[in-house]
Length: 249
Image (cartoon, rainbow, N blue to C red; front, side, top):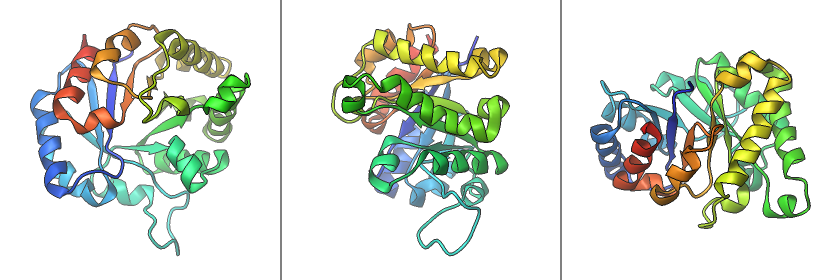
């Protein structure tokens, strides 16, 4: 059985005091039966790492650069976030793709560099509303997934995990129905199975897209949904912990 994981992507929210207090509140209530990872802004990484010290809660970075080092003002490498104690990183989030121009190839490079730095990458894949309504949702998601599979293979992919995030359901209050989410999760798992059946059964596939306490249970009951990448709800410790406890159940 795949162990559930719930990740909290804080995005560009919160000052230092709020970040530390939120991390401590999550640590105080996190259930033992689920992996919990917090993704604060870069500038709060070290402080949040210190706040979760000696607990089961882990910390990740929201993104890394697609190079190991160099003249990239304002950028942060995978080895740098590893050095301050991060254990995970998000790559390919829809906001990075849409706003900052991350390409499939660039995301694949980031995934590979995270593996090189011994950080577990969470690969985000997902389609826009236009792509879904035009019947291209599956091809878009598989294109994004294949870019990483071509670079690191199924074994490399297994060292991280996948998060399906329908772009039309992020920050909009809309959520894919459990059936819609399960359908795409099954498609993703089948695509991995074509490379390696055993890996497809072990790799965790999370759902991301307006996950809240009141819809988490229905999502987590689906057989191929192994947890969640939570956005806005992760900024409220009580609601985020309720999602974590639902996953643990």
